Image (tube, rainbow, N blue to C red; front, side, top):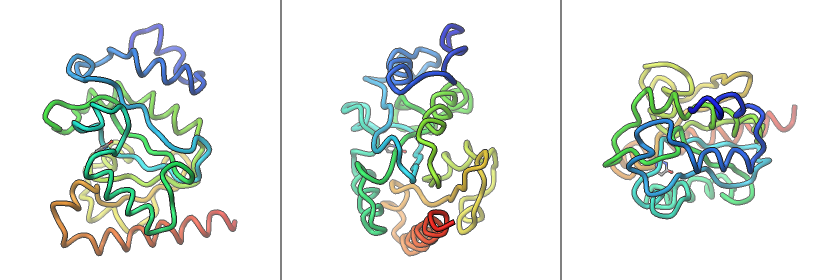
Length: 197
Ligand code: URA
């Protein structure tokens, strides 16, 4: 981040944060993006879903998860009684599309991290759901396989975190859909306990 932004991200309100993301040139992804993809949903949601980064359609529209994977995510949300505008906030590890949908590089994720951390601090979710390997890797600072990370409750700075498959992966790997459903049920029952406690 440029130094003038670096000092302030932790103190930004939503409007300032959105503006900082929109004008960010901290990493090379800023040179190839059409536009930034900030995040969407209920700013006071109990649920925070975190993906990897914008794809082509997100880059064109400026909204997360609006392509094919997004449709599946909406269905996954619906399956546990959630609506994207009401009950959840949706964000990504990186706010700019990696060219050709490659994975974000560690430095790109690192440069973008203050924005995500500020989104988390502002939303104050009860539960974070990391969608896919890249999100899990970045949030939990682990190289462990997704298979070994799912099915348990992790901790992200005091916030419970659950890992599941990325919807784009599920579109290619139908055999893991049943496992994703288990993860969603686990997330739903975890939320029920959190809200009851
Ligand atoms: N995949 C992601 O990880 N995020 C999006 O916003 C869209 C597709």
